[in-house]
Amino acid sequence: MYSAIAKNKRNTVLIIILFLVIIGGLGALSAWIVGDWSIAIITIVIAVAYAVFQYFMATRETLALSGARQIQKADEPRLYRIVENLAITEGLPMPKVYVINDPAPNAFATGRDPKNAVVAATTGLLELMDDSELEGVMAHEMGHVKNYDIRVSLVVFGLVIAVGLLADLTFRMIFLGGRNRGGNGNAGPAMLIILVVGIVAAILAPIVAGVVQAAVSRQREYLADATGALTTRNPEGLASALQKLGEYGRPVARTNTSMSHLWISDPNRPGFVARLFSTHPPIADRVARLRGNADRF
Image 1 (cartoon, one colour):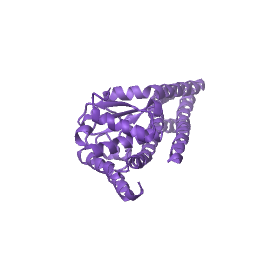
Image 2 (tube, rainbow, N blue to C red):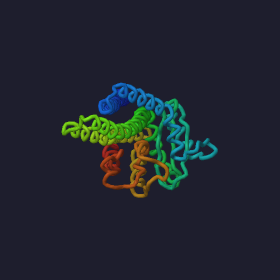
Image 3 (cartoon, one colour):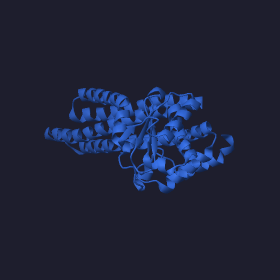
Image 4 (cartoon, rainbow, N blue to C red):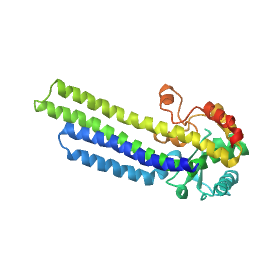
């Protein structure tokens, strides 16, 4: 488990480097097309500054976007006590607990580190799960906190947004730069090919960012499942909860694709594209892993 936590911290650095390469490539492409290399430096600085801003502000944005409200023990004693007991068991600081008024059963964890962690559950989850299942779900979320998945997810959240904004800016500059170069008499087959490559790059950049987001999240979900089962010593509780999420799950009303990877199950509407870029492994696989390794927990 400690090696997994260390790996997550290394992955944070690798993810930042990968996204900076994507951001730098988009900045260089925009600068070349417009003919001003200072644009590359400016775009990279702006994108990095925005990503840093997101790192510190994304938790607030996520809570606001989902409509979550903070609770105390008197407000929702069942949920609060379960989280409190899990924090004590794991030796973690008590996270802030939030409830989202939504009939869709779901939950998520976020924050920069265990000291600044937040866990949230929907009213639909609280109504659907029995105590053992709710404990399994919240142990999964506390697993994200313990394994520093929340930091990786927060970095990915900020950088995916930064790449999307920069890709849109690059796309606009391509057309502006293309017209300017064409007006100078430099247009030709080579220029057209370069413009096409630039357009493709601007389109593919956010797609690549989404693929990275999905790949990172899928592995983190498996690890959090295992961590939660080890914490409760009751893998059946989480397995049963996941089955219910698969049977009774529905789209969460207030969410978007940039925070999809935070939830315990996919909060979006199903579809081919959604499955292709899904941030979650199939629930059936997760249940099978939990039950297949029950004697190891």
